[in-house]
Every structure is written in structure tokens, then in C-alpha cells.
Image 1 (cartoon, rainbow, N blue to C red):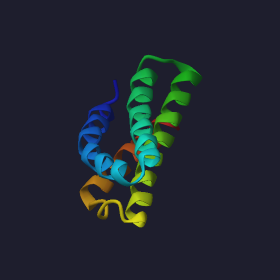
Image 2 (cartoon, rainbow, N blue to C red):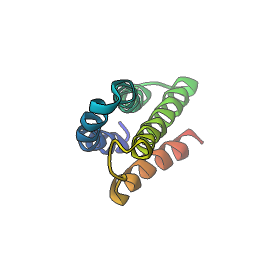
Image 3 (cartoon, helix red, strand yellow):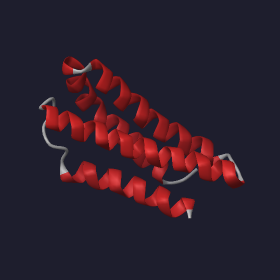
Image 4 (cartoon, one colour):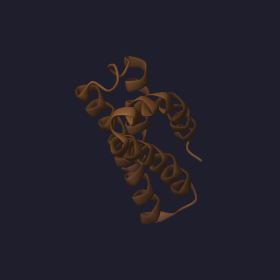
Length: 105
């Protein structure tokens, strides 16, 4: 299992209260955010047990889903549903995305 998996699980815990705030204003955006971050974690786990092209495909999907989660949060900020994503959380998202990009190469 990639060490980044535990970082993604930590992000799930951190993002959960933000998703609850988003849900009060936009249930669809909240649902998409939950699904995207869950997909990121699940695809990293699945990729860890895959080989060859399947592994790369799972990590590619995980990377896209993690970026989608960050985008959901950015959109929620622009709609005024939540405050700006703090720098530490953004750094963790960037760390996960950067690691997955390196693993895919």
C-alpha cells in the first residue's frame, strides 16, 4: 500500500465537516465531493493490489478524483458555502496529487 493512502484517509476526516457545510447549500456538490474523495482512497487501495496497466489506471483515477475533490472545495468557496481552504489542507492535497503523478510515470 502506498504511504499516501493514510494521507488521503486523513483528508477524508478533514474534509468531512466542510462537506457538511456544503451540503446545507448544495447537496449535489457535497455528494460529488464525497464520491470523489472516496474514489481517490479506494483507487489507491485497489491500485496497490493491481499490476501493470491496471495499477497505473487506478492511480490515474485516484489522482483525478483527488483533484476533483479539491476543485469541489474551490467551487464551494466561490459560491460562499465555505471559507477558503487553508494552506495546510491544500498542501496535503498537492502532496497526494504530486505523489500519484510520480507513481504513474
